[in-house]
Length: 604
Image 1: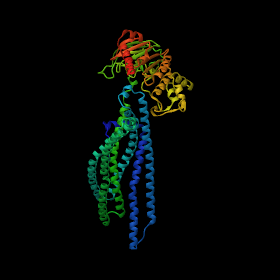
Image 2 (image 1 turned 120 degrees about the vertical axis):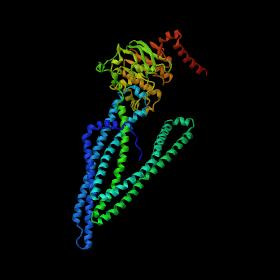
Image 3 (image 1 turned 45 degrees about the horizontal axis):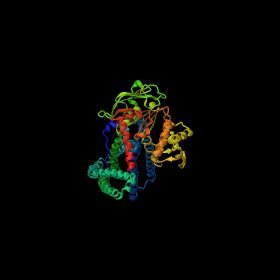
Image 4 (image 1 turned 180 degrees about the vertical axis):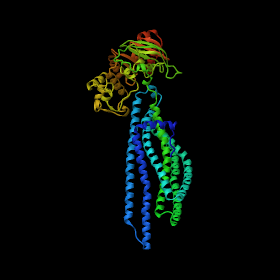
């Protein structure tokens, strides 16, 4: 038996879990009653069977003595009663299993729904500080572990405790002396099992550690197969895998072998117990203190007594796993939410409606951490319909400004206003209804191309989707695909190129028809020829809309109304392309260095 993963706050987590299960308390009470009833009827069985054995033994003895015979009618009545008891026990067990399964799955359903709803209310900072796998684990592994272990552990705990108490009572009712002899055997088996567990635990830990390592290696090699082949590193990858696999084999072999010794030890100790019970029971039967059938019943009780004790130990392990999984789920559900930060006075603020697109940054100051400021003092006025390009070296704060504008984060000081209203006075979801966004990292879901483009506006007709695709210069490409607009995109849209993914996301933004556009390196993954076509489409798209364009290719933003040049979180220059080139400042330096680099490459 492997040690369970432990929760940091076992009691606190279980209190929360019990409060969650409060709405199912009637079903849980029924589970307890049915489980206890099933166990009780099952425990009574050997005592009833003992009467049949005694009746048969006395009948045989009477037949040998010539004073009577076997009363088969009486034995038949006893067996029918026994059959009824076991049938009733099975029925109650079936009902409690059905109820417990329903409760555990309803609880899983509720957790998954609440986690899914919670994800949509979480601030962007949460996802940027954690891996995708960590978040996914909460809604898959942890909830599944919670549902399975909770359903099994509660039922097992009830039946095990009821079995231990019931068997102890039945054994005492037969013979206190034999019960004492049987109980003396338990510490012996417990001590031997403790020695086995102590030696096997370290190997179990090694097994889990290297199982995780080998899974990581397999995933890494599988996802990076093209790189491994390109650098002829197959032998190195195989050697590394073989080394880890060898350690896993040794630790798994030792852990399984040592833990496998528990059953033979339990059997050996149990057989010693049977011998002791048989000897003492025979002596008591000869003296007429107990019946022969009661010896048979007592042996059955002794045989069944160790199993629930082992199950209780397993249940304690399962409860640890349940608490650890529940703790991670509750930690996620208790994370601060975006809308929770909105003051009560602003929660009923009117919807912004369709904005005009006037944007003002007033002395904005911001840092992802309090001790590290990214934006020091940012001020800018953007008129409706203007195209604003934001340029600068990596880490200058370009993307950060966009995140602040869309309220993925809130400013530390200063303000950002849209149409004269502070963005913090708007509900986040209603504010974002006015923004269209195309990022450098494309995101397409598993579905048809038509569905992926329609994601920008769910009520759009097929004709509107096709018109958006034409505006993004992706229509002709889609027509060449098998199935056209109805072609299914695979996982991560791996059946289309990166540039084609970018075109589809641009078509989605065109279809959304938002008054404010944000283009963060939107053409970074397409070739030069396609980039020119997209740029023309973008120029038509941005007419009458306020547009923020982040670009490293400075040739793509020459026609922007205003170019903001950022360095170290501050605007160091602003103006049109010609004005900035005429100044010969930082922008001119960036622009010239970019084209000098291209010229050097061409010369080489």
